[in-house]
Length: 230
Image (tube, rainbow, N blue to C red; front, side, top):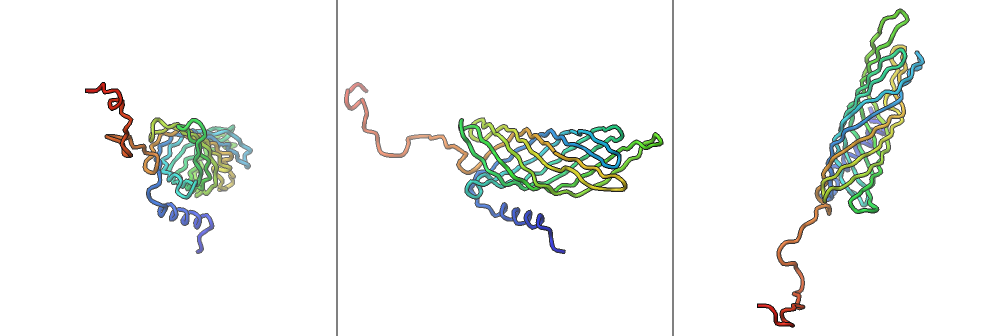
């Protein structure tokens, strides 16, 4: 069976990422996230805002091609909430491919990022549903998801390499799978990541000069003019 266009895009991008030029700057970061989305279920006319938290590990190759960055991310998040009839829990494990740009305006130790990403995920939803008889019916189902998303961020560098940052991400659809007589969806995903990271390689490392600097000899020595030195 021929792979989908999304799978082809992922494979080509991963190959490009692995074969990207050596010697460019790279970043690695750990993130703690707050996540929220709008749960809706058509059959029972249910609605709730569900929220939770997550974690993410990011590797970003900075300026791999001209001004473009490439990156890979691995993460997970968990959401839960309650509508009038439903208790909802959604857990997701995912891997992302990101392409973006990094730039700085003023001051020099502040950097901004704009990213577009493609996410592959394994989603697991659990719905505890109150029945008309007064009991509770539990429904659990897993699903595979794929989603494009956009994100902006800001990083504050503490020195030349260590940085703190925050990113804001938006996704149109966090979950969508019909099963049995239920049609649950989680829309308008909002993810805020608080991150700490380290930049290495490239031109980000500043070499502190030691010893006598290279270049022509300085002959403007006051000792030669005023004869005041021993």
